[in-house]
Length: 185
Image: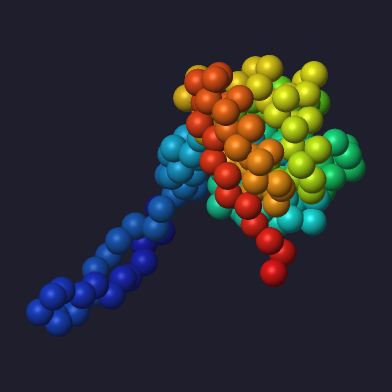
């Protein structure tokens, strides 16, 4: 194992050099698995102009994603990015994958209900009130499979009356609804 010299400091201002071993690739895998294991999967519905960069930022910071978009092409970019997940080299990714049991840090599903089945924290970023109602209350909506205690964060910029109605429906299911709209400004 290679060693390197590190400059160490003390409160008194004394500085000295010490020999400290560099972390081995195996210990990096442990660190990676620990940081990934501590991050709960996040469901993300709506990968358009606003949702796409938000979801990418979560992925960049190591959060496993369960993603859905009504347009399947919106998910393709994440599938391509999954091969370069987190910017690590392939060797490090494989070490992390071995300890985690998977390489990708995302999962594409076929409906909002499937997102709710796999994630306890879900962010929706949808363009209109109608889209939000469909994603939550539709035939394959979040409310069909939401778990008690789940946190549902709606970042869509929609009619406040719709948000209040969705909050009531979510509360009936034993989950928590948070209205957190964003704007593109």
